[in-house]
Image 1 (spheres, rainbow, N blue to C red):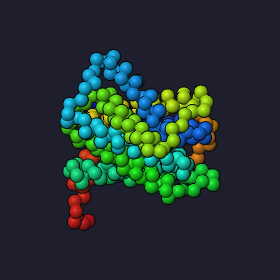
Image 2 (cartoon, rainbow, N blue to C red; image 1 turned 60 degrees about the vertical axis):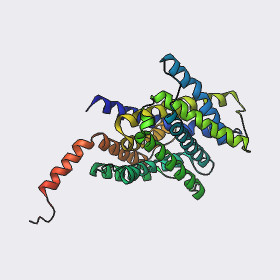
Image 3 (cartoon, rainbow, N blue to C red; image 1 turned 180 degrees about the vertical axis):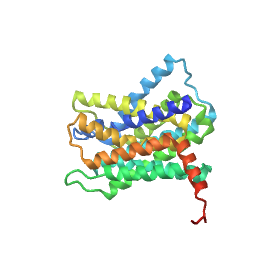
Image 4 (cartoon, rainbow, N blue to C red; image 1 turned 90 degrees about the vertical axis):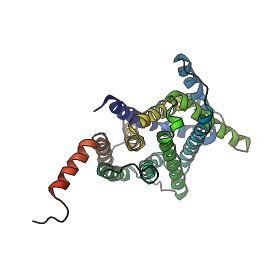
Length: 309
């Protein structure tokens, strides 16, 4: 396996694990008076100086070419909408179920790449998506007396669609491909912050943490599922493409289950274990796509259509 591909797969896996911490840091803030718009505004604003410091230390320029302004603006709006609809869905359904439902986006990415950019849809990708879907269904179960909210599901589907569009655009836009990862994320968060500022200016309430730990949660949101996760995702897309990165993102629910068991002491069921194993199998198929496709091709040659014994 080439070094760049190995690096891309590793970054995609790290991004998925980091993104899985979103509910753990965000949901407690809701219980202490904060709303999703305010949580996300602080999350994005606190991430900006971190990215700016990294850019400054690396001697990177902050300037954008004219042809890079609009694409980064579109990416910022897409990311802001994806974050907002996901965080809003936590108010209508269990956050773990919402985070699992979000992972319909790899299917959306695969369909977009095939329909609009003529990407070859390999047999291994089909198998991978089917296995992944089975694993996600097993992990997607309401907790206790919780039920699935149709409005919550709609919010998650909008979040998945906007995130899929973000991933595809990062992969196919020539202007975006030339922007260094940290610089691109800096402007994505910058434009996204403006979206939330506009929402507050037009009536959404600005809330702040009531306790000191709330600021720590916001800082953690800025570091782990924002700077770390989105930075790794963006770089992974550039190295291995949008579809493999999206599918590897399905490791996020697995990391969420492991986190809940190790940190929160929640019980793990056989259903959780089987669901997690199916997702691990699916992501392994992505990494080994070349050998899998060759094996399937050899089997087709051995048993051609129309052959009878």
